[in-house]
Length: 72
Image 1: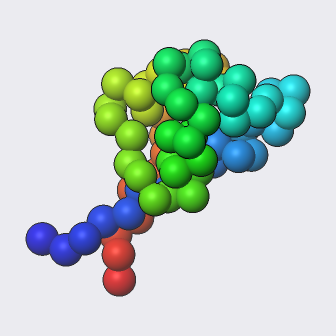
Image 2: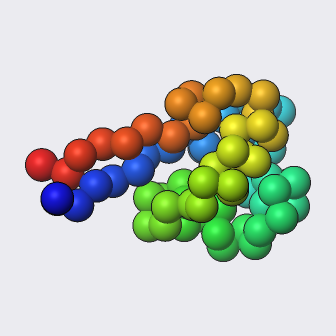
């Protein structure tokens, strides 16, 4: 089984939701701003629970926030 990559639309969603800052999102979902930075840059894949919390914060389905892209 090869490596996989999880991509996300968090940056776009933050700006579509009143230009929410990374700090504001972090506070809403209970993590540090650095965690949000790492997730946005695809340096870190969130837990399933955190992924759902992020999607719920934006009021969108999980698939609108995260997608799974196989690494070529």
